[in-house]
Structures are given as C-alpha cells and as structure tokens.
Length: 186
Image (tube, rainbow, N blue to C red; front, side, top):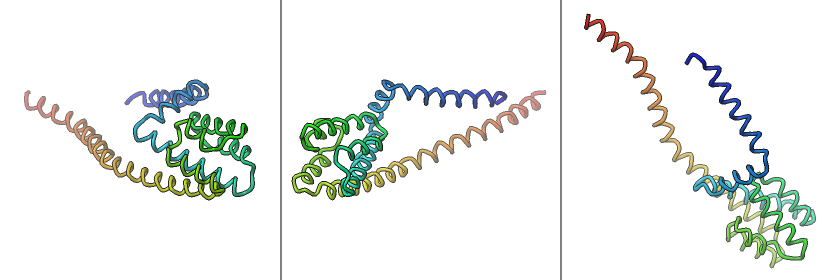
C-alpha cells in the first residue's frame, strides 16, 4: 500500500467524527437504544448496567445516603442514556412517594427478576442487602456471558487469521508463478 498514511488518516478522522457525533443527544439516544436491541450485545450491556446500578445504589444506601441523592449518583454511573432515563423515572416516582419497584417495572428496561427482588427488598426493609444480591447475581451472569462470547469468538478469529495468512501467501507466490509462466513461454 503506497498511501498507508492516507488510510491511517481516514481511520483517525472517522474515529474523531464518531466521537463528535455521539455527543449529539438525539444521536446518542438512538445509538443507545439500538445497542440494547442487538441480540448478544444488548443483553450484555443491560446486565452490566443492572449490576452497576444495583451495586452502586446498594452501597450508597448501606452508607446512609438518602435514596433520592443515591439515585442521582447511581444515574451518573450508567453510560446508557435509555437506562439513565429509567433511573430518572424511578427518582421522580420516589419523589412523589412511590416505591422503587413500580417505576422500574414500567420502564421495561430492567428484567422482571430484578424488579421482583427489589420489591421484596422494599417490603422486608432489606433493600440494600437485596440490591447487593442482585449485583452479585448479575456480576456472575456478566462474567459467564463474556466467557461464552470469548469462547465463540476464538474460532472466528482463528479462521480470519488463517484466511489472512492464506491471502498473504497467495499474493507472495502468485507473482513468482506468473514469472515462471512467462519465462517458460519464451
């Protein structure tokens, strides 16, 4: 490749443009919504967000931080705007005197098991302990999902690298073979 620097510049500018585009609120929301709908990736992103939400909120409640302030802090730890909106709805609902579980269920972002466990935690007065259990469960699920993805990705990487090496070998030997044909044709 003669103009390798141009290829490098195009890749660099594409990355920079993507970062700037992602700062636009509407684009970011659309991107986050799309990511949540991707079959394997969306499930993993949701599990990571739920684990982070539960761990952070549980830790803050255990430390004695008021629930509304804890929800504001927890919202800032979540990178997906769709899930942040769900936490915002919970915050607004609690401000009006509702429970945590009801608005979580309405958002349809959090899995039913999480909503049920939080509901039980609220009813028994052990919300912080229940949030920590949710975080532990989802941390384990995230770890298992990542291991499964890596297990599936390994053969794909091997096939890709094999194809790349095969392409390089063919591109190196093809000129030699054509040169041999030209010499024998003389």
